[in-house]
Length: 403
Image 1 (cartoon, rainbow, N blue to C red):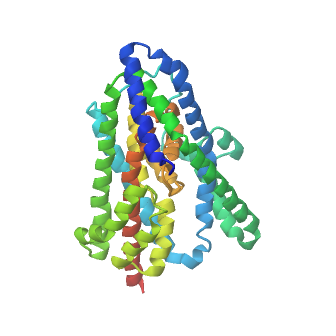
Image 2: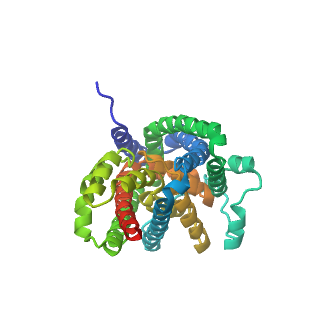
Image 3: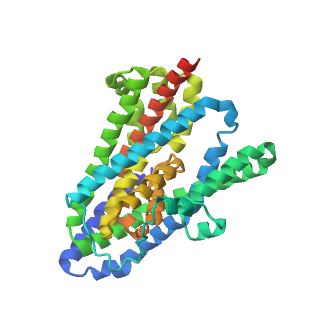
């Protein structure tokens, strides 16, 4: 018999969790879910927190060294990275705007956070934050899960390995091998998501009632509004402004890759289709061959919007009100974190745990949104792939003008 797919397992776990939670809620024995189900969800969350640091560290270093000789790729790499970073920063802003509109309208809930232990960190100003992201002790950054510092360490180590050239061959091989192991471990932890979904949904519905279900639907609507606005305002407009291509032609040419990404939830698996779509839209083969694989690693605009919306939602659930300074940290962290997000299904959930750690929001609340992560994942992967194709077309035009 064919093994049931993970999305189907998560869907079944979601439905069962809601059913069990409602039974316990109306039956008056919600304590059963708190005492006997929630601990298994806590184990899943602990595993997510455990994998965050090695995933970010190794994936970012591996992505940097995979560029190989930066002088060889030259201006193409610079234009590509700048395009991706700019669009990701814009995506973060769009995500925060929609999230705060929904939150300001009272559409996001406040749950009972008495049992969650967290230390809300005060924002000491931009310069203080800038200084704090540069570590004094690498191992302390790892043990404290200071994710901004982990990202900086990854950038430095990746750049140093590139600069060392042939002498760093052993380090290159070690990073590639270690990252392959971590990817397998990450896949295993993500495969446990149905357990986390069932236990947390049963616990949340049993203790909070059916109101939380409406809130989850609203946060999905919020994220998808961000996806659509970003695709229209950023990707189609950049193709129009820089390439002279109409939005209708752009989306028509990218449609096949968008649908494949939406259903597969993997930008890496969509690469062959993306390349065909990019070629149809006029991207040169050598540029598309560079931009698309790089984009599947570092262009995660959909993930950035998801992280911003989910962060504001979960902060509201924990009764934490984010300041402007903390939102700036969300933009910086989500932008840099998106560079380290693997192009595989479900990886955005692990990056969300990283952003929550950076703000001091209880990672345990991630169990609320894991239940519907597949729905978020479909939209954000579709947006990511659309951005990869848009970048390949724009860079081709820019390089043509240069020549």
